[in-house]
Length: 223
Image (cartoon, rainbow, N blue to C red):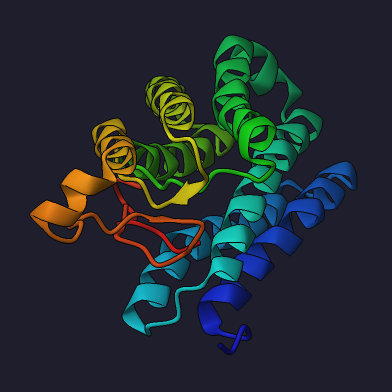
C-alpha cells in the first residue's frame, strides 16, 4: 500500500508542527503560534475523514495520528506558558487536568501494549473539537468557561480510554466506546459462540487500522 497519501501527509504535518509551536513560542511570536495551532487543529479534523473518504486508511496513518496528537498535547501547554503565563497560571488547575487527561491514557496504553492506544472514541472526538476551539478562544483573550467545560469532557474521555485499555487484552484501534470494548472482549473470550452465531459486526480491528469511525466530532479516525 502506498504510504505517501494526503491523510498521512496531514498527520505528518501536525507531528512536525508540534516542535514548531514550541520554537515559535520560545521566540515570542504569539500570532504565529496561533496560526500554526489553527493549522494543526484543522489537519486533525480532516485527515481521518479524508482517509475514509479516499479509501486510504492504514496502520501507519493510525500511528502518525496518535503520535501527532500526543506531541501537540505536550507542546501546546508549554508554548502557552511561555507566551501567556498569566492565563496559564489563572487556569492552572484546568490546564493540569487537561494535560493529565491527554497523557495518562497514552502512557497506560504504552505500558500495556508497548504502543500508543488509538481508540478515537466518540467522547474523545467531541473533547478534541471542544478543546481546540476553547483553547483558541482562551488564548485570544476570550472567556475561560468553554475551556473549563472542555477540560471536564477531556477527563471523561480519558477515564473511558483507561477503562478500554484495562478491558482489552490486545491493542485494538477505533473502539468507539467502553461498551464496544466489552463486546469485543466477550467475543474474544467465547470464539466458539461467535463462530456459531456468524461473523462479528463490529468494525474494530485488533492490530489494524481498518476502522469504523469515531471522536465525537471526527467520526472514527484512521489517524
